[in-house]
Image (cartoon, rainbow, N blue to C red; front, top):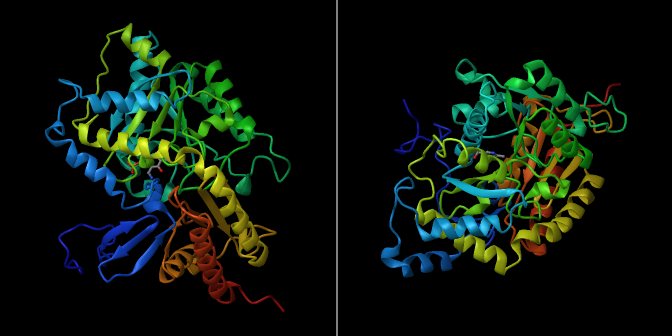
Amino acid sequence: MIANRSAVLYRDLRSVPPTIVRGQGVYLFDADGRAYLDGSASASVVGIGHGRTEIWDALAAAGDRVTFVYNSTFTHPWQEQLATGIMGLAPRNMASVYFTSGGSEANESAWKLARQYFVETGRAQKYKAIARWRGYHGVTLAALSLSGRTDWRRLYSPMLLPVTHIASPDAYRCALCAGGACTSACADELERAILDEGPETVAMFIAEPVSGTSAPGVAPPREYFTRVREICDKYDVLFVADEVLCGYGRCGAPFAIADWGVEPDMITLGKAIASGYAPLAGLVVSEKISKGLAQGTGRFVHGLTYSGNPTSCFIGLKVLEIMQREGLFTRAAEIGSYLKTGLVRLAEHHHMIAQVRGRGLLYGLELASDRHTRTPFDASLNVSRRVVEGMRERGVVIAQGLAGSGDQIQISPPFTISEAEIDEVLLALDATISALEDGVHAPRPG
Ligand code: PMP
């Protein structure tokens, strides 16, 4: 029997989450009038903040220009304008955008396009993808096959496509450099994986420049993506940067990979691109790939009903306008340093904070029983879940990182957050961790 009385199939079938009836800035308000500071930007989506009614006013004023057109029959000015706008921000080697409704679709489209590109350019044996453990690329079957999130893969493992996963570039857990200085050995693993698979069969490598919820805030050193690019070039493998979460302003730039000075062959976007005001994501495609297809059959054998749907593109355009008008593509870099300073200061007082990592407004905290030996808490203590719940009780929403490999939490508020609002998050975190600390530390031996 289903215990809750809702007609909605929730992730948790035993409880109904609070009903949110209104949003304003970084705050959400539930049906009982309770306010929540949205310190996770609702799954790192709402870059411009909640309650931007100018978007709805503009949509209403557009009248009968708001109409659905099917992408393979017609285009619409809003799709064209949004693609042009995104191209204006994208790395120089990029040529076009394929719009989707969500990030999983964008990544799945990238894999299919990689395959088609190699068929069209005379290398039909190339189809395999290489990805990373603790990478996250979505939940549809092909996207989940790319994802290295073991807790979400396990149940569906008989149904997944074979994908080779290499180590995550996570200095905290690095087994490759044996505690010494980083050698980017995890990037060299890519070369080994390509050689093991046979370079003539490998089509693409996909990675998040800055990791999201499976390894919140993990950002490799500069050499890492330089090395990835070299390896991909050497073996004719496409490099796909998944920026569904870390892109579009989240890390303080339109495209996070810019920090590494590397040009990927494709970049996937999502989340902040429409800031949750519409379902919208996309795949940014390089000139090389577009040309390969154009000079071949000239047709991408793929099609999603809602690709480039005008309403989502209109909202994407309004979000882009707001982001540019208010300097939100770079604001995360400025205000993020305030958040980082506060988190580092908290770590000085709370020994269970073993690492603060991330950039822009995407931070991950590693929580450990002993931060010197990096000994995790016993999983049965559910430390990260209790931190998230404690924060919620104090009116602040944050996210729990991947469980099962230690405890991690993620803080990724809207790009509009103020210093005073960051202080609210920090105060709640200080109080939550203080309340937990005594209960979770095992008594010292002797
Ligand atoms: N890639 C990354 C990096 C993500 O964070 C997510 C969503 N959390 C996805 C892909 C999948 O996007 P969606 O849930 O919109 O399908």
